[in-house]
Image 1 (tube, rainbow, N blue to C red):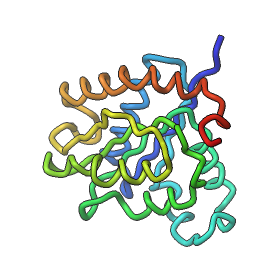
Image 2 (image 1 turned 90 degrees about the horizontal axis):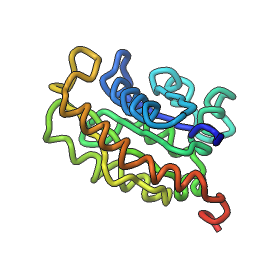
Image 3 (image 1 turned 45 degrees about the horizontal axis):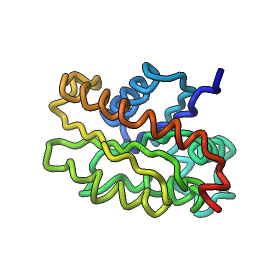
Image 4 (image 1 turned 90 degrees about the vertical axis):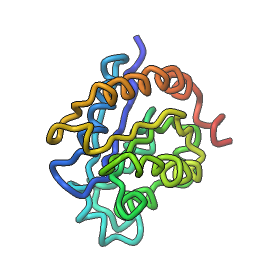
Length: 189
């Protein structure tokens, strides 16, 4: 028996309840339907206050340090942010400013975002993908964007969005398995 995939989902939303958190949870659930996973969801609404005042990693609380280690050691990252002033939220970026520069090399990252309408969908390509390319992460080709119309309250309600989540999970799973089987030193070396 192989160990479950360590899946860490990060919601960059600053609100609770949150459509972004609902989206990353739905994507995480789609992976859990397809493979054995050990999943963790990190929400900025929970860690944001402790993160905002820190300028260096050694100033972070042990709880936030544990979240960073989870991000750095995950087999798959699912990251999502609401569109905020044409980009991801500032605290989302601040969190990833503390991630080790080479700790995401070769790590599969599924990009997700939410916004008021379809016009914001390019956040995945123009904001999120470049951020994770800096880390030399393996940004998965199929991202998941959801607009307000895709939700009923704070639950994914759109059949089209459910289908896109399923497709993203199906296409990503072989890459996650491949990346998880590679020794880290081959990726960073």
